[in-house]
Image (cartoon, rainbow, N blue to C red; front, side):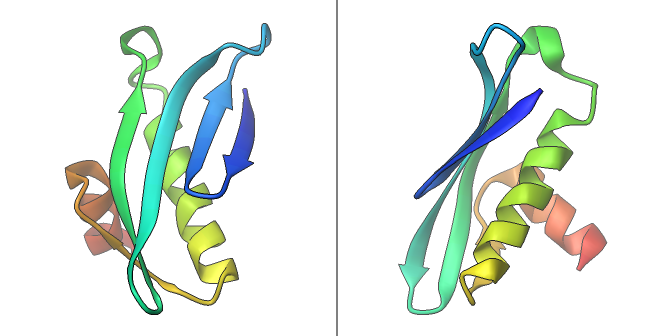
Length: 83
């Protein structure tokens, strides 16, 4: 699995370079970036990929000097458990 980064999205590709998971985030107010969506292809669920995406997104958000928040239920629960 390889993670690829775009301005408001991180996505995972398999060995054939086909995307199979993604996380989206957007600046919702100055200094705050909100994770809005996390999705993993049904064939890849249960492997910890969503958590890897959330960790990567939080690291990217903090690297930008912003605070992470989430409206995505998975990411919101992750932030509560790990922050």
